Length: 134
Image (cartoon, rainbow, N blue to C red; front, side):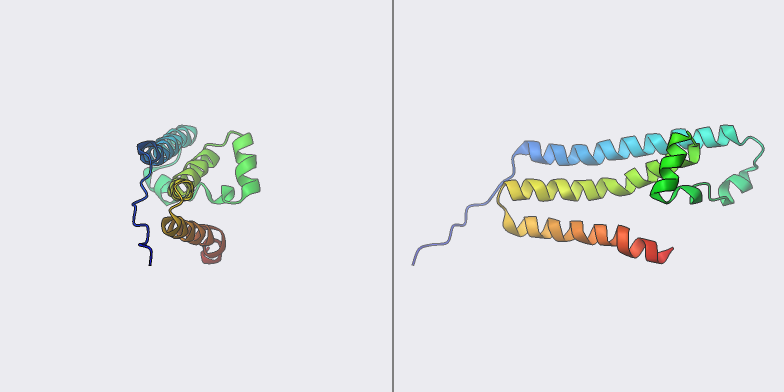
């Protein structure tokens, strides 16, 4: 009986650095958008008190794709805050997808399946469960 192949499949070092880059880039871009949009929102609404700023939900009108697109086109700070939050939420999803892609290229079937399952669960949570929780 032939011995099973027990060679360990290793990803190239660039795969790990690119997966880390996805996380860093997503975090930097999303946080920059959120901070700049929040600053623009505060400057644009100087009459609001601190309590009013903290208790309002300025992004409520931009939670649909159409509302977000209209707000971005109209250069509304609230829409850019929403985009920053969406990017922040999408960053780990992109990281999982990147891992799944690299695992499939390395022909590491078990880890490809694990990453694919996590990816599908994240998408299910965002697009199916998320809208139900409103």
